Image (tube, rainbow, N blue to C red; front, side, top):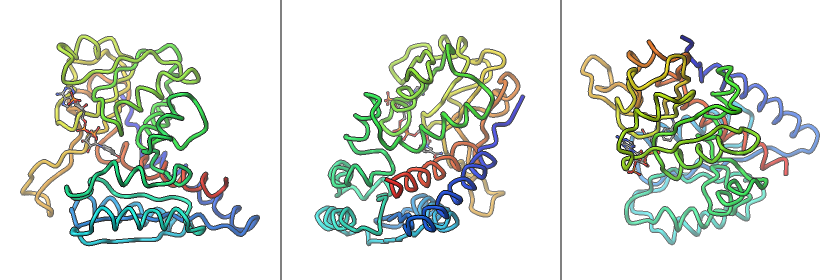
Length: 287
Ligand code: NAP
């Protein structure tokens, strides 16, 4: 059984991205710039944006860090996004989700210019992805495809099962896996699927993105399957300094006994999500 080391793959790709940033600076005098907006102080969001900003600086990019109070209005946030749309130093705009409840995610995402939508969340980018046009691929799904390739699996003709149908993970992963250049056969499972194990036991690859620990267990797998565990769940743990530990959606212990390869949590999908954000920001600055 092989551990698919997301940190290692992320490090390899970040080296390539940093080299790309250097050549863009020296050849065209352009420094890729990413604006990261956080509204409020949700602890998980604070740690995500801090990691994104650090990675951005380490890659030699400009990181514009914007922290707004939780009481920021939707109109203020939309106005800020529109200002950044016009700012030539900024090539990518990221609004960390979720935003506070009085602000509509949709209104904010819709305000981001598609050419600066490095998260790949705007309807224009999603539509372009679906019809195979040039676009920014959403970061987590794109990172998942890279991880499967890194595991050594050629997806052509393979059966992939995706558990979860969210707009940011499950649906786009299923779309990317079934593109002609990837050519996997895809089954998308969700809470309306009566017997998920029936599908996963026939799968060469299982991507689990349900947001619930133990959604996938070893008895649900075909021997040798590749498992990509997207879930990030906080489990109370008094022995840890922060009082919790992170687990995925797959039961690592039982799955690792049957799988051929599996991503750990943490250290699997997470580092790749940030890496693909840098990838898109560099791509945006090159355009
Ligand atoms: P989400 O919006 O809550 O969607 C979860 C999906 O899983 C829904 O479609 C839901 O089905 C389905 N689901 C939930 N429980 C299920 C079950 N028992 N059996 C089958 N399907 C089930 O979550 P998300 O945003 O996709 O995120 C999923 C997980 O990935 C979370 O733990 C999140 O923190 C993590 N995540 C990690 C990264 C990263 O970079 N590492 C990035 C994004 C998300 P219904 O549609 O029927 O409700």
